[in-house]
Image 1 (tube, rainbow, N blue to C red):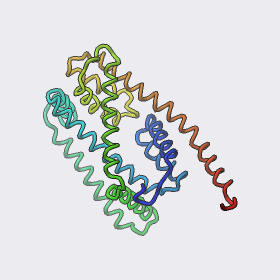
Image 2: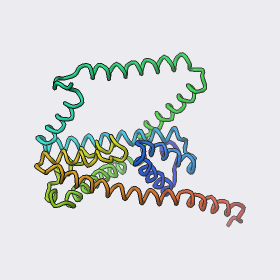
Image 3: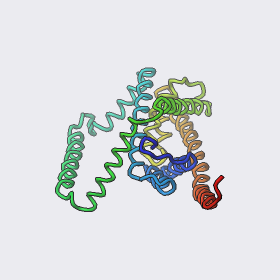
Image 4: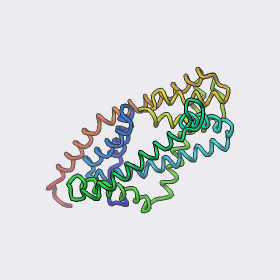
Length: 275
């Protein structure tokens, strides 16, 4: 946000992130909206520009996850290749087990039609207030996304990104030691587990059910019984869930109190004699 001329406080930013995580447990991506709303309200940062920074952040998350998949693919080629192939078959093959060109054609057709309709609509109704408003939002999003080029501390950003994903891997590895059947698995196993478990976090609200399922299925390829893998996945998911619920609830409670106190402190300073 700083390349765009905004410097929200650390505390409000932390509150917004944790409340966003809390909201995502109920409705996927609702947390992104809440983060924008909170910072727009308490830090006066335009919401449409915040959306752009979040898009940029998610883009880096996708890149980071792709790198994790690549590392998993290199270190455990057989396991990742076999399980990824199974998922690919489920998505692109019909009931008889043959490649379904119909599914691909329908998906491409829907996307193409949607693109054409939106392009025509924006061109024909450019004078409407709603179209002008949407264009304003899109410009703000684009500004937020491209702000990544003007980062003041690029290497610090990259360092923090690597550190965060390293902690994800380490946390997953430590989590594998929480159950007897999965204790002793390698760091490479943890990387593979994190790669596929991350898909579970995407496909369901907060990863409920899917997170543990993906962990169990990928651990099956390492000769871990599904029941043990699912138990470990559930335990790891619940640990994350509990942290988000507790910290997110505390932040949700403190957010209005902190900003009320901050406003009160500013107002009390108005009119004070200058030194």
